[in-house]
Amino acid sequence: MNKRNALFFLAPGLVLLSLFLVLPLVSILWPTIYVGGITFEGYIAFFKDEFNLKILARTLRISAIASVVCILLGVPTSYYISRTKKSMRSFLMALSMFPMLTNSVVRSFAWINILGKNGVLNNLLVASGVVSAPITMLYTEFSILVGTVYLFLPIMIITLVGVMENIEPEVVEAAETLGAGRGKVFMKVILPLSMPGILVGSVLVFTGAMTAYTTPQLLGGNKNMMLATFIYQKAMTLGDWNGAGIVAAIMIFSTLIVMKLLNTLAERLDRRGA
Image (tube, rainbow, N blue to C red; front, side, top):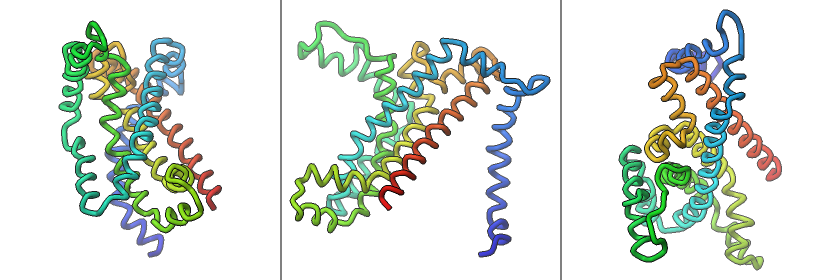
């Protein structure tokens, strides 16, 4: 296919992206840097405000921790699923994807019933004598983290299973034949070969956690705002659309920076493998 034909087939998609993605973004972001002239005063003011920096730091911290937790839980789970029989694998994959079939609002309300002071977990802890009185778990960073991991762990598992299924059994058998135990095979063979899937899954989880609104709003409340809830407050509650555009731009650029770092890491690992 020559370049002219390629452009012909790409044109409808490029037009749609321009109309429904690029132009809306430009209309939101342009007023944040052009006020009678090019200026970055709004961004400078954002980074000078300690309250704004706390929200940015909280968003990055929870997104990073959620990504790490999803890796720690997703890698062994995905490896187990990828090594089961095909019929059982299909069942386990469907079971892993089942939470995604439920609306995120419903899932967040479920965690409110679990983590609340009169919730299932607190009642269990008090009844078992672990604690003498209910502890505060809801409307904290912990509750946001739990809800975020529950929200995006299926994505990590689905991504990793697809990669681990392609690891040839002969490679594992060769490592075992050479004297490597199961733990060493997993750390020295399975994990390095799964690194592309881990990086892709990390990007998906991190970007999803950075931009999630429902889970932080319902489980974190106004005391633990993240960037997405901060945007909503500025736009819908305060009517500060320009300020909301500044926060949105910072969220977009922060996500792009992290994606670039992960892509750079992936390229270095590929070169090392080559």
